[in-house]
Image 1 (cartoon, rainbow, N blue to C red):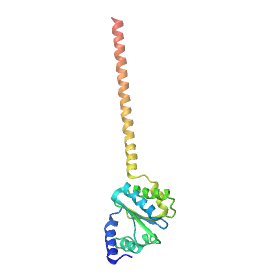
Image 2: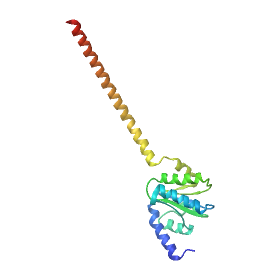
Image 3: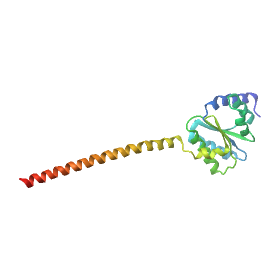
Length: 186
């Protein structure tokens, strides 16, 4: 059982961390053994470092923290039923962080693992997790954007090079013709 001081320390820590989080995901950890939770934490740590965490917190403490930092009870109360763990990401791409969690759940065949959460402080439910996890990450979107921007530029470069190449070909042909006329006319 947690002491009052320990609960207060957890509350203060979460009140400090949650407003900075770009992703909060509530998950049902019922049926997960310690080894599986340890493996998930290791995977999160190796991929996202100290910017993402997976931790078990009492629903009553989560409710207090979320209410105090400005979340609407109607947006989160459905997530706080049954055993709840929270996954949060402080920086980076929230979609990338969510993909880490979704791939783990899929790999371990964890049904009803997701309860819902918040991306950039906007609520989403468990059904939307698969949709968000299928989206490209920010890095992938940047690569697509750069590719689309570069494509017309490369096309223009090739077109201009082709025009210059044809001009050089015509000028060489004229020069050859004049040389042959000068040789034949003398």
